[in-house]
Amino acid sequence: MAGRDRVAHLLRQLATAACRCPAHSNTYHQGAAAETCTVRSTDYAFEMASSNIRYGEGVSREIGMDLQNLGARNVCLMTDKNLSGLPPVKSVLESLVRNGVNFKVYDNVRVEPTDSSFKEAISFAKKEAFDVFVAVGGGSVIDTCKAANLYACHPDADFLDFVNAPIGKGKPITGALKPLIAVPTTAGTGSETTGVAIFDYEPLRAKTGIASRAIRPTLGIVDPVHTLSMPARVAANSGFDVLCHALESYTALPYNERSPCPPNPINRPAYQGSNPISDVWSRHALNVVAKYMKRAVRDPEDMEARSSMHLASVFAGIGFGNAGVHLCHGMSYPIAGNVKTHTAEGYSVDHPLVPHGLSVVLTSPAVFNFTAPMCPERHLDAAEILGADIRQVKKADAGAVLADTLRHFLFDLKVEDGLEAVGYSKDDIPALVKGTIPQERVTKLSPREHTEEDLSQLFEASMKLY
Image 1 (cartoon, one colour):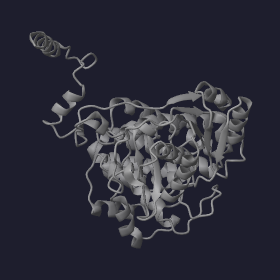
Image 2: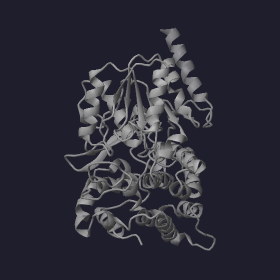
Image 3: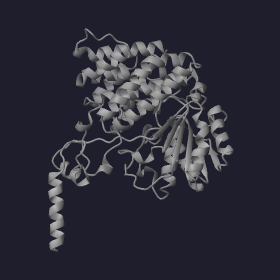
Image 4: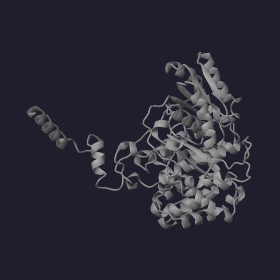
């Protein structure tokens, strides 16, 4: 016992004498976190997590070797019916065949997935003993594949167990998943970098999702050749998602103002609030969007512009995948989920559709005019990056300047004139607000607190853009 006491005494002395500088301190272990969170209501730390990323023209040809290196014996490849006959899927399949990889293809992914389409993919994944998953497509495909991997590895889980609260139970994911390689074909969602999978929950006609670092892809293979197959409007709407990922994460509530403080690191959310590392990625993505997005939309053969936007999607994905998004995304989910008859140019689907990037960007002028008073410097910085002259602008005018800059940007890219142009009227505002309320995972990261009346006014202000 005397020996144990001496060891305990020495350990206590070491803990007391530990270096206090942030770069070397080892005091932020679980016990310290739990102790800190008993005396403060907001978080004090943030984490940086991202998939491994490989970028290069034609790099998807390497995927067969990657699967060999993983020792894959039975691969599940997921895509959608539109992509299944296009070059991105063909090049991946050729690589698998060339390297002798055994695989099965699931091509029934729904563009803008629902809980039902997720469950169909999960059922497919559960029927086979897949040891690696591959997703070739946009965010819908990658998110569906994440869900299939998750529930195939947790066969006894109820579907709502891992779905974000308050719609689901929001349980932490503690079991190991199979490797997932994502091959994005759009320059928008950044899903190849994040631990987020979004879907429409049909019973409530609202979007929700699963958010956990555990579901992020093992590897994202970013091949700019694949973006050349995107129609112009798909390139535009994908780019708007990048734009808003960058803007929202850069202006999100700071991580050390987010509550509650997690009692255990496993409870720290993937979306943590703006932080010094995410800021770098988000701001850089915004610069790339400002320089290349219009070119990428107007000329599908402009490899420099399209490849730059593909990288911008990755940059913004790393930024918002750790900082989060806020009101534009929170409000977009009921806009997409309550769609009536709108058809989207460039999308070969058999159902009404407001593409995700479009549903996000339509509220952006109103949202950033609303949030600007909480961090006007960042809003002005964003406006300047997007082309505004801010030399004589007062901080009090930051919101109006960024809103006007965004309107000009959207007008140049022929964006529909507000929510009315995609089928909504002022009579729909109560339903849109109701669909936004469950999105607290993201809306609580708004730098400015808001009420239901504030949301109503934001939707009303977004009915017309120009």
